[in-house]
Length: 383
Image (cartoon, rainbow, N blue to C red; front, top):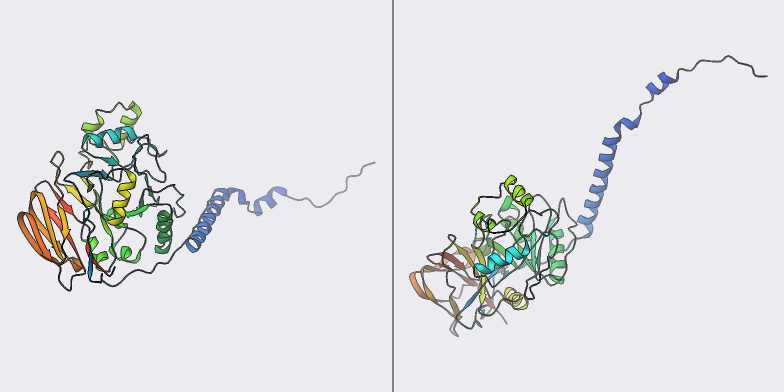
């Protein structure tokens, strides 16, 4: 027999109201948890993946002069483009195909081109193809280029990377066979001069870029005794309208390019590139020239202009730099320590400069009618 025993009446609704439920804060808690995981990850990689490098702080010294152009033979020259992006990456499907890029550059007289997509090595059917990739996903555009690299690797620093972290990345690129370049340093001031002075591991800087031209960046580094090379590239993302109209691309790609304000532009393609010696155009020979600095950087002043001719540069036994060219330049400049202009020769295709005792390096700038040409440094060495 069941008895109903009277007892205190509990108001369950009021108790529930008094106990605050965390459920209504679930989205905030999930966000804070993810933020904590990301912060912990970022802190861990910043601490663990780092490399310190001893950098030179004194000018080049020695009785010998290193001339990267001493062994140039033949009268021809090879145009090479080392920075272009295709549609092969999943988040850039609206860009141009590898075949379209290679075809357009070949039509413009280029001997070879590297496809440097973000975070991956894009393969092609061309056996002489130059492998490359662009590393970096951060908004500040602190990216790095690796030419000739054997395999890609993940960007472990999507939010922030210290200088030691960047040194680690560049060291890994070099171990994988890459020639390391700092691209577009003036874009969002991604790499200031002070920062480049504190970084090691890179071999060239894009001083000719659609996002800012500044050859004087080289003098800051060369004056410290660091043999850093020039680099010139289109950093191709989209061709001008005249080229795009000739492509048989799908409607959706036209629409995305239009909505992204990428159509109708003149474009920066074919204007900035490097020049190697005659016959130096496959990956192995181009990489060898890059490593030794045996190439010129060219910036054409306008589309459709003739290519400026690069000179021959020889260094004699008495330390005289002799320049000879088939093209008559508007001006030839010899530039030394801290960017000092040592000598200017106007309206000529021949110039000569004798290395002074206090010259640690000399680089040359040639201003032609259709473009400007930069040489890499001729510098002192004890070997």
